[in-house]
Structures are given as structure tokens and as C-alpha cells.
Image 1 (cartoon, rainbow, N blue to C red):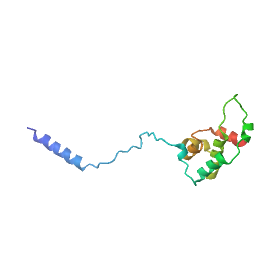
Image 2: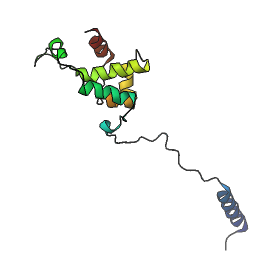
Image 3: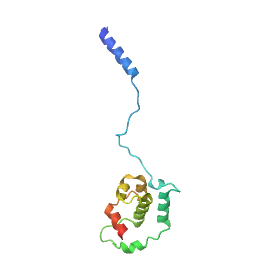
Image 4: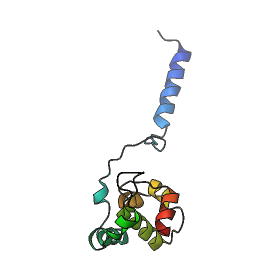
Length: 129
């Protein structure tokens, strides 16, 4: 036989459990792995899609080959198409600084750059050439 005070305690606990709010879990501090198909993120008829389409299909970028004639010696450079997409889109948004940071944090910049994250000095050097 259960003593009366334990029985009363169990009754109180059961009542409190029944009256507690039942919330969904908060996963805001949980890491996530979200697979992203980069080429499917740019939606047609948006400014970012238009910039990517023009740079990839209409601009002749062969003149950059003379400027960046590093052959196999020296370090590799970022493709001009990627740099132009970053610069054009940033200018369209009025973002004249923090373009390198945007390539790390903004999904649209990540998609335009193919998830390449150039350093801000690389972007500045490209602009000056």
C-alpha cells in the first residue's frame, strides 16, 4: 500500500503535467545541412538571373586572357565571369563595399559566384584592371 502523502504527490504531479503547455521544439541553435543546387537558385526574370545570363552568354571575355596571362606559372585567378557577376549584382543593389562578405553570407551571391569566395582585395584588384 502506498502512503497517502506519496499518493497525493503523484496526483499533484499528474495534474501539473496535464496542465503544462506542449510546445514544438525550438531548433534555432541546431546546425542544418541544406543541400542547394546552385544553378537552380537563380529564378528567370530576376536581376541576378539576367546578369548571369548576359555575362555567360553575351559578353566576350577573351580580352581578360591578355590581362591575366599567368599561364601555368603563378597563382590561379578567379574567372572574369564570376568577378563580373559579383560586381554587376553588387552595383545593382547599391552595394559598393562588402562584396566579399556577401559572397560568404548571401545565397544569391553564392549562386552567382559558384560558391567561390574571393577576398576583397581580389575584387578590388579586378576592378582596377
